Image (tube, rainbow, N blue to C red; front, side, top):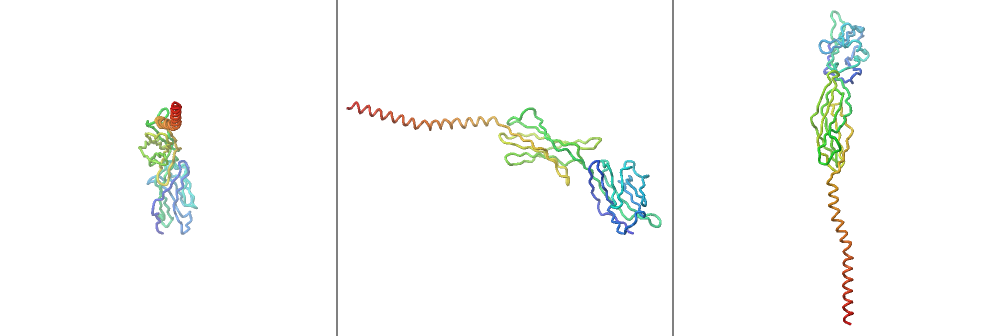
Length: 272
């Protein structure tokens, strides 16, 4: 018998407090009876996670934190690790030995790297200014997400107005709970918002490769500029004056013409 060693480390993802499934990737092409095999899992080089000794599960050598948390599905050669936590992250090795004449011989070895995932809350935008936004004043916003794992890559602001979207990336503050090991993240935005046009601001949390992103509920802001009324007044005042002048001008011309005719008639009468 030769030793079958997996060519690469298999990446395994599991949600926090769910059951993680670690496969041995043992083909068992020769249909060897489980009673002739010794199967055990270990984490790193020292922690024994699970052991099946020639068909019987043995718990004597297990690391204390794995007691009553593991189960082996021998049909699928898969280890089930219940209530997987962040402390369970790491590399696991499956080793299978065959009972042979003399000492058992290793016939299979494979490795899995377990990653734990905890869902972040939906990013939430909060306004740091007090009162209503004013024209040409700075708008201070924060965007936060809590209770996730692993640490996200970054946070991006999406600012949209007049059918154009701008992306802004600033420093992301990261804190980790000492007990739960979960992360809280926050980023801030300080901008002047254009007046007299609707501006939509969103926050995007990038979780990393194959984990996707989370987006906040968009914040819509429309600030009415004080100068807009001034422009309206300055523009419509002269226009109304011109319209009035144009309206009165024909009457003025007619009135002047009538006066000229009247003067002519008086002159004719005097001559007679």
